[in-house]
Image 1: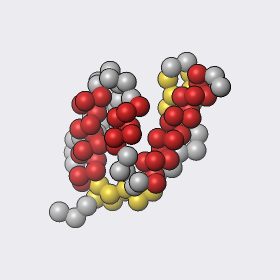
Image 2: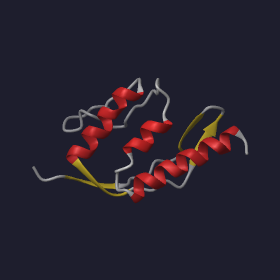
Image 3: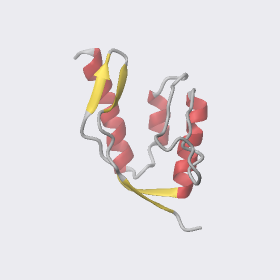
Image 4: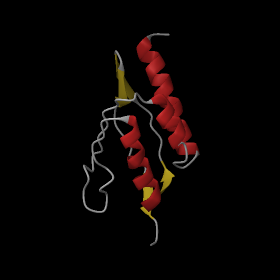
Length: 104
């Protein structure tokens, strides 16, 4: 198996766990990401989604998951296609998924 295939397999499993647990697999995500991960959300800390900012390390990334899961409930999220090049792997076309805001 090539490194790229191995990276896709790791990410495929992570997204499967994310979907199956309805967002409850944060510890698994923390176990597979590099200490110095560079992570950004499309929301880029928009109002009501301040947690969806850019993160530069694994410890700070935990804040993204904490914010996401405290205010939102995941209903559905599956990924069907990935792009892998050398040591990088990402969703080719991130799915819309489905979440809804928790009642306050």
